[in-house]
Image (cartoon, rainbow, N blue to C red):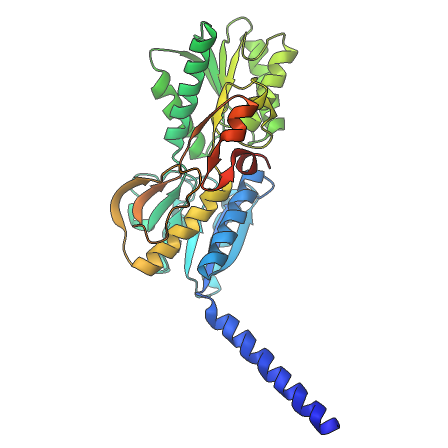
Length: 351
């Protein structure tokens, strides 16, 4: 009886070893993702999308977060490279795009492919990254401008003077969105001020809006805040200063982010689906495409904003691959109808 038990145990151990070895062999390697802190829910969604696509493609994934600090992120890159670990590739989301160029260059010199995401590449760094896969923040600013101008027109309101509440200084996505917005409203709206926040969420937006609105009392007819969390906070500050959003002042964030109630209620002029989940997903897909196809096509590709169909893994990888940015009107019905790549606006925008 004991001999039979020993044989069964041995067989079980061998089976377990074979299963483990098989699972290890099935992995295509580890993708290392550098991102700011997931205390920002958009970045948390980015990580979820990246992990889901990595699992789908057969990769392991390692996420290294920094606390919205470029120096910390630079140290993390040095530590990762010094480890000598062989990786399938890197996904690089710098906190401060320009300040992180040295780290980006170091990653590229490792010989592993580097996919840049979220912040539009800085001109002159093309040799340091394999492909860009993420949002086009110039487009985000342009879309927000179109939503705002359209809302003012439909309401029969005179929108002229206004201000931009932008992302923290040093975050190039904030620069790009402000540029895209200002280019689109040139000759239509007058920008009185551009003020950076200390962060990306409601508290930081409220602190700036509650100062800038009374500072320009009687002048502001619109605010652009670069995402909906900041916009919702601006709407609250406007009401506290006796202004009715959508009547006395028009507010747009231009990127769905967090609680959608301010858009659905009409307090925010409208939004657009920039999905953190799918930005992470497409960054990993881009890396998988490069490994599988071994090439990058020059030029840019705007991925189709299909309601139901995901982008194919077999499509070509371009040097620039842009996340769709479909606009959504400011009503419950519009939110209920909006979808991107098989997920609803509520799934992609509320977190």
